[in-house]
Length: 282
Image 1: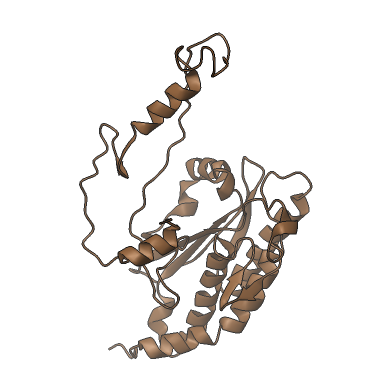
Image 2 (image 1 turned 180 degrees about the horizontal axis):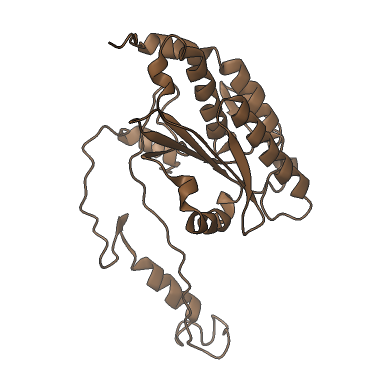
């Protein structure tokens, strides 16, 4: 007979609230790394960020290891084994960030976590260092709860943290092809999207994907002046603009073979919230 007690939402929330000081301190440390992949002069920042991630997840109870990938970055991967008959959840995130140019014009330094109006700002505070630290906070909370709720320790946890997502993640793709066993899991949880309002959890089940495509248009021997031949002669740039315009129809995809007739029956943002969050002008 199982002696497991039921974990209530209130108890789970209290355990997570207790991790908030750690989350703030950890995010402060992680944001300070200028971990822009392939940026000359930032190699030490990238290496230090990877080492920080390894240490943090080991401290949280997942035995991760660094893996050097084909694009020169480090992916951090590990597995806390599940109990027999229990599933494994894969937690994905990345520690690299977009470059930060013209920092003199920023409201605050991109490499320093700053609080304004109840929100935390800094390069990667949302995408994706904040999500990485959230995983750490949850794992630490689960560890505190497990003695009273042993069922929480039976689910396997696999961690995959890459270092070049913002540059395409080619190193991780090559590692997946070479060693698929490192990614084996029953469910993938990617905490790399937002929510409609502070304090309102959101679950994203699908996003439009992307695909790199190289298109070459050959129309003229060389660019021509727009006031002479451009427009009358088949200008390649204008032709490419017209070609791109055929891919969408009032926001819907208009690509042969890609259907746009699916409708989500869940609850989404109202029109005013959508306009505000998307930055739609009057």
